[in-house]
Each structure stands twice: as structure tokens, then as C-alpha cells.
Amino acid sequence: MPPRQTKYIFVTGGVVSSLGKGVTTAALGRLLKGRGVKVSIVKIDPYINVDPGTMNPYEHGEVFVTADGAETDQDLGHYERFIDEELVRESNFTTGQVYQTLIERERKGDFLGKTVEEVPHVTDEIIRRVEAAAEKTKAEVLLVELGSTIGDIKGMAFLEAFRQLRNRVGRHKTMSVHVSLLPHLGTTGELKTRPAQYSVKELRSYGLPTHILVARADRPISDEVLDKLAATCDVDRQAVVPMMTTKNIYDVPVRLESIGLWKVIQERLELPERDSDLREWAKMVDRIERLKHEDDLEVAIVGKYVELNDAYISVSEAVKAAALAEDRGVKIRWVNAEAVEKEGPRLLDGVDAVVVPGGFGDRGVEGKVMTATWCRENKVPYLGLCLGMQVLTIEFARHVLGDDKAHSEEFDSSTKHPVIHLMEAQQSVYTKGGTMRLGDFPCKLTDGSLARTAYGTGEVTERHRHRYEFNNEYREQLAQAGLRIAGTTPDDVLVEIVELKDHPYMVGSQFHPEFKSRPDRAHPLFSELVKAVVGRKAATNEATSRTGSARNG
Image 1 (cartoon, rainbow, N blue to C red):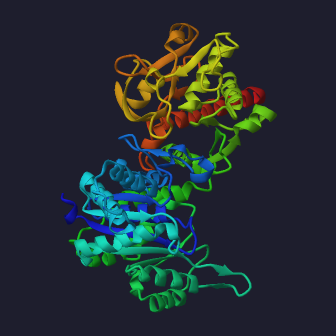
Image 2: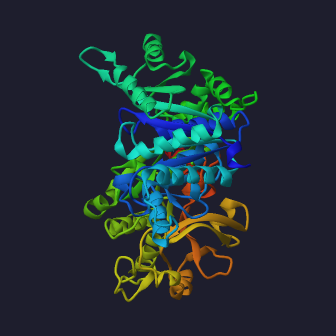
Image 3: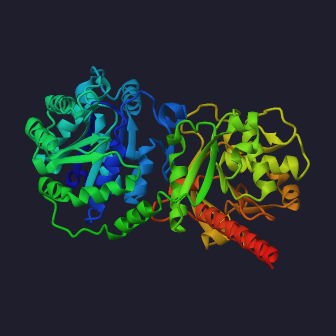
């Protein structure tokens, strides 16, 4: 589909950041998909960094990896989980990427000595990237979310690009959705609309009207307040959407459908009438609501950035999806790996399973090793992701194979026992950012392995993000000691999955299965983790029942 046939929805935010624009955008995508619209989404991050790949997770949260190997904003994870479509490299770009492209072109002489300016050169490059995403994804409707807040200087060029694109493709091929905060003043007990009014006015000053206004608040919004917003912001009343904070983000598309927002979008973009098909999604939401107060299971996520849960958002969502598939509620226990180093694995007492996610740097690594030891010795189900797989290997080499000096070259470059080492393809790579083994790669599964049983097939494709790998020099002796090689690349060169033979479920994957999990379709490795927990609890309950019966007899 040529990009000129694509219709665009621009999503912006007002008053403050972190309002949930990403979830709103994803929910709009699900609403449209539920009406049979071919939809895709772009996230624009107006910072100078080229991408989030080299940013501290405390700065930016999780780095989400696309199938084609781009390191992107965590909102792309929300998008994929909601619309269940694989996004692409073009689905996320930054100010840094825009400037980098223009500077490289200028250095090559592409501008023939002309002055390179914000308008038209920067805005043209922004439009080119948006249209490239439309072309690549063949979207009938492309949602474009702009990070940051209206009024912030770093977003000005993008708003001008939106205005220009609106004029180029025709006004009924674009619409603007604005998400704005209604702050609550405790002294008066009121939700104040004035900040939202100013935010909409500021957006209008850039030539962009507001067609849908999403009013965000932490408490119910009265009809009186919504009427006032419609009148003062020049937005049709049916297009003023009250959106209270929710703990179940997957409920948002159902809410939007129930208030008739499809009709607003359909009329503005002149889309054909289509029946809604959100029934299965709504059933999933109902199951989540039914289970959300039932903490049947407790799963620990042991990492170094746990104070910011968003650093592992795809992991926690994958755990919840797996528990939901088994009709179980789940509680996440966030455990700091450094705290485990200092206080020991008692911080894990009582958990039903452990997930050790990916990460870089040596901070907290020994706490993760201690976590793996505790899970192995106590037969607690364990799933290691990327670094979590490497930690599993290090722990096994030290405490089962008896090689107490075993380590990873990433954390001890002089180790004489590098069971984890730098990939050969990375030996000559010295720059950071987009240079790791990134994106989809095939994995061949070993017959008889837990992984093979979980997937139900002999070969899968999963997303990667790493520089270090399992050292094949130790493969035979680790295997003889009981570490099963459960998955490799098809040429058998790289180890992709390891697991313990004598354990209910202790599995490590070099890839990131969390990126392919969906709320209504749990990933097999997470599903098997939860099934192992359910089986272990059932066996414990049965044993307790038998002991009680014997005593009574």
C-alpha cells in the first residue's frame, strides 16, 4: 500500500509526561484492529540519543528489540502486545537518528552546499521516516505517538512535520489525539481543567486541532467536567474520553469501544463501517479482573534495576500472561540482585518460581549466581533470560562441575575458566549501540528436552540481544555433569538453551522470549515455568494430605 493511501493518527501528551500515552496508543491500535483495520504504530522519541540501546534503564526503562534487530523504546512492547503485529526498525526513531542522517548527508555533499535547516530539511526527514514506516508495514491506519509533552522545545519540529504531513495527504486522512492530565487539588477536592485547556491551545498554535481529547485522572471524572473540556477545548463532546488510572491496562480498548470512540475515528478518517470483534479480548480482560486479587502464585524477578519495574516490563507481563493461561493469579516479588549478595537467598523464601532477566555489567551478578544455586538446590522452578542463562551456566560449572573459578569474560576478562565468553563475531567490535547480535535468529531444539516439549516443535525463531555466549570448549564436560544442551543454532555452533536434567524446571535461554509473549497467548517457556509451579504445589499438597491422613489413621 503506497504511503499516500495510509491514514494517520497523531498522539500527543499534555501537562506532564508518563500519562500513559503508550498504553493509550496501543489501545487505540487494538480498537482499530478489532474493527478489521490493518494497523501499525510508530513511536517518536525526541531526544538526541540515537536509540535507547546504550541508555541506563533507570533513564529509559526496558529496551525492546524488534524482529529485524532494532533496539527501541519500551512502548513498542506495549504496541506488540496489544495489536499482536510484529513491528519493524522504522517503528521507532529519535531526534538523534534524524540529525545523524542529515549530518551524514551534508558531509557527503548531498545538499550541494545549501544551508541545512529545521524547515524544510529536519521536517522532511521526519515525514520521510513516518511514511517509510507506513510503506514497510502496509498500514491502513498508522498511529504515530510523539514522546514528551506539548510545549517542550524538543518536540517542536515533530509537530511542524505532523502539520505538513496533514496538509500533504489531506485533512480527512489525519486526526489528532491528545492525552492530557486533569490534576486534583486536595484543598478544593476538584479536578482542574485549565492545564488541559492550555495544552490543547498550545497544540492548536502549531496548527494541529484536537479531534479526540483523552482526559487522564486518578479519580472519576464527572460529566460536568467533560462538558467543560468539550466547550473550552473545542472538541466534540463524544470525543472527550474520561480515562481513569487502571491496574489492568488491557481493559482500555474495551473502555474505548464501549464509549463509541470507533464512530469518532471512522467518521473523521472516512473509514468503512466494520463490525467489532473484541469479544475474545474482552473475555481475557474479564479473566484478569477475576484473578487479579488472587495471588495463587508468587514469582520473583531478580535483577539490578528492580526499583524501576518498567526496566523488566516485558518480563513481568510474560509472567502474568503465563499465569493467566493457567487460570491463576500471580504476584511479582521484585528482588534486587545486590541485596541477595548482601543478605543471601533468604530474600527468596516462599516464592514459587524465579526469573532472572537479562542485563549488562557485573553489579549484582554474584547475587544472581546465589539465586541460581538456591533454585537448583531447592528444586524451585527457574527461568533465566540471556544473562540469566549465562548465570545458570556459571553456577552449574562452579557448584556441580566443581570448577569454582568458572566465570564470564564479561565480568572477569582474565578468568582462566570462561564458561561464557565473547562471541567470535564480536571480537573486532569496539563501538556500542546496535552492534550486538540483535533480532530474530533460528534455534534447533533437542529431542527429549523440556524446551522441545514446551514449544511442541523442532525449530523456533526468537529475538536476541547479546555479545557473550556459552563457550563450546566446556560443552561436553558440562553436559556430562548434567547440563542438557536443549537448543542450538541450526548449524550447532551457538548454544541457545540449557536446562538441568534432574530438576522440575531450570531452563535458561540466550534469547529473550518475553518479547514474543502476548497477554492472550503466553510464551511456551513462561507457560512451562508456571505449569512446573502448579505441578510442584499440587505434589506438595498431595504429600501433605497423605501425611495428615496417616497421622489421623
